[in-house]
Image (cartoon, rainbow, N blue to C red; front, side, top):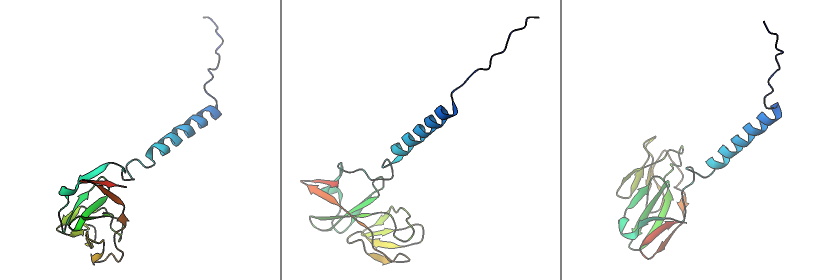
Length: 136
């Protein structure tokens, strides 16, 4: 038998491990900020011809509905229900309905048509340039 001396293998220090984990966590947090939770801005949502007069169109990814109350007048509102923050996609003519608790909103002015919601939809800023509608 040979007698070899066993040397302990040293790994990274506790300080190095904590710093690496902290840096990784910060990177994940910064990557998540504004990624899918925030609507994208500056890119065209639709052509003006895509939005029916007296109605609207839901853009689920951007969490916005764009409407045309009267010819050439475009408005946009959040599609997050003001009752309990449920996302809404059910649009029939000029009424956006919440599947969670049944609230209904006018996409023409954002007002509550039927509760339990009591607050109107949040207005969103859009710009119309030529035939292009862009979320500001």
